Length: 176
Image (cartoon, rainbow, N blue to C red):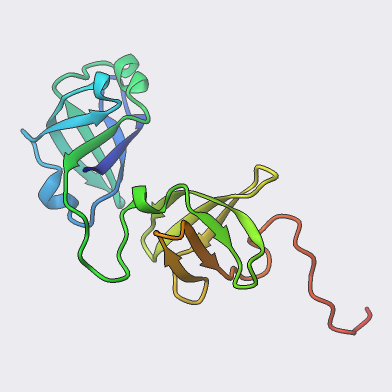
């Protein structure tokens, strides 16, 4: 199975450097000069890391095969992938296992479809595309993401008020 280590983001500067969205919990071990990565789509690679730096928590990479801003812009969205095994950790999922799951409330009410998982400094964020096209960003914490059932194809979420579009405040009986 192919696992995504990082996704190439915006071009940075004129000489082919790019930002990357890190998708591994050990980037300092995986993103090293000289490392060669297969890519998704496969036609974009393989890519060999020529240089690595971090600044303000963001990762920047240079590749031997990308030497200009134009080439860096063309590589945006390309994923660096490795061969990996299924996780044997309980309550741990790879992004590809979550993408495509139906997001539902505990009551069974459909909310949308999981389209991404963002790694943020405080916690991961589950990105759910609602039927109206709005992208809800739900913190991946136990209070809001109640259950993940990959076999059933669902993730049960109870997001706080305001994260979903079109939510009406619950009636409290008070008038203002």
